[in-house]
Amino acid sequence: MAAQAIDLHEELAEAKVGKFHWRLGAIMGLLTLFDGYDTFNPAYVIHYVAKPWGLQAGQAGLLISSGLVGFLIGAAIHGIIADRFGRRGTLLGGLWITSIFTLLTATSADSFLSFCILRILTGIGLGVLLPLATTYINELAPRRVANTFALWGVALGWALGGTLAGVAGVFATPVFGWTSLYWIGSLSFLLLPFMHLMLPESPKFLALQGRVDEIRDMLTKLRPERANAYKSAEIAVGESEKPVNSVATLLQTKYRRTTLAIWASAFLSLFCIFGLSGWIPTVMMQRGETFAASFGFGALMQIMSFVGGLVLGHLVDRSGYSRGLIATWWAFGGLAVLSLVAMNDHLVNITSVAAAGFFIIGAQFVLNNFTAASYETGVRATAVGMELGVARVGAILGPFVAGALQQYYQSPTPMFLSIGISAIAAGAIILLAKRPAAVASNSLEATAGLRKVAQPAS
Image 1 (cartoon, rainbow, N blue to C red):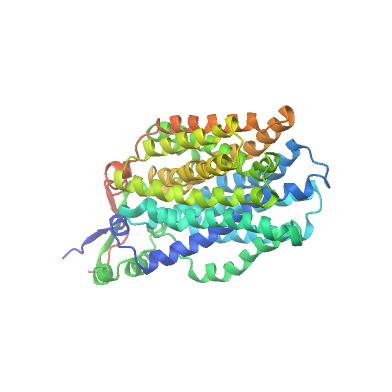
Image 2 (cartoon, rainbow, N blue to C red):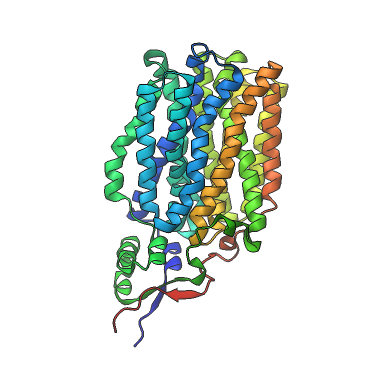
């Protein structure tokens, strides 16, 4: 009698959220905490090094952007490596690179040039953490709570990391200097032993490799109530899930429109996020805010970004209409930034910055999940990596352009105008993307043809 065939994708999508999910979410949250922390702490370095290193506003923008250059490299190449050799080893490698060069920044960065070089090298590791954590979460999250679970597992850690950078900027840097930011960041070394012991391989990658025993073990942990069924069943995945490992695949006819819309909107989104967050402490001091309050604005943005992402993710999970809601979030965020052009008041500053974090960064969190849901497993890590890689070009330009505009016009007004308009444009562009098949039919992969990867002995 033939053994029952089990669709791996459906087993993962229909699982209840259990201990395995919570543990994975905690691991990804800790990873992205260090990512968010390291990504945003250069904004708090500017205040201390601009005069000693003789930096103009444009150079200070490069100081922020240097780490993002490395991120671009890491995000662009890691997906190809992860799709071919596995998520686990790639993610561990990224954490090792991040930890080593964060520590070297604390001990050896004593000039503009050395700081930028070390930030580029750190960024290569950071370019692995966020996109690959997003891929992990999306391959394991139950379908009915996919966005909400991803936000709790990835966005919360990233937002807490950015918040921690603000807190460290306010309390640690006045006492211990700016290098204290990187001594704190090097605590990521403590996470490495736990990652080596506890981080599983992606089950969908295991299926692509035909590693059936590991799949059965993981499914048993995810759904212990079906342990007996997994002992003898065939494991099947979509025929379309063969690994492709080619960026060119993202520009094939079935993906092209969605890919270009995602890339353009992500570019503009991160242009806004990093242009604003990189300069908020400095600009707010120029607008009359105190040192502590100005540094606190960065933390406020990160706190509100998670709340905004969580609300948006919940609405997307309930309605399934992700594009329109993401567009709405970016439009409101753009209007919040534009309000800073017209008014300079303490309450307006707080409200507008909080709204910018809530709407603009919150929408970016959900865009990452939208991207992951738009592609099959074989190309998903490449797709997410390329989305964030292209977006990082915008992130690199954001602080630099913001600094150059301030240097040329001697005012933050042109910066606010460029960021506000860019956020609204991002919202308009994402509407051009096709609705993910995973949303339209509950599962992109569930409707694909099945191929057997294991035939148990009769």
